[in-house]
Picture 1 (tube, one colour):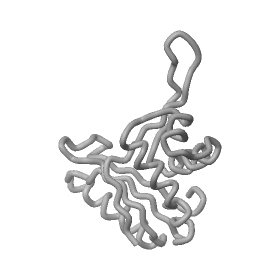
Picture 2 (cartoon, rainbow, N blue to C red):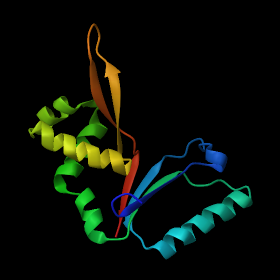
Picture 3 (tube, one colour):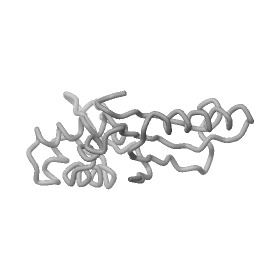
Length: 142
């Protein structure tokens, strides 16, 4: 559990991705009982040799913790990253926000598994951190 939430990822049998199935990310409030109930359902599907839905679930025990992840600024940042990858500086400029504030939001979204930051070489010199969206579809369940 990271800062009040649990992340789980599932993708097909033995982690094999199911063709034609989009990765779905669900952000929701969920107590431990439902968390374990979901785990049992997945184990049962695996035992029966059935396909396991591709999903990434971000479950919060505390609704206030969930609200900290889905602020207006972070949602705008996530939408911008989905429209096109870019460096932290580029994203800050596109959003007309302070770079350090964008970096803090990127750290939170990366920790949740919605985006990833890759260290990329720059042609001729140096490196840059490129931010890309990981989640293909995001659902909010309250």
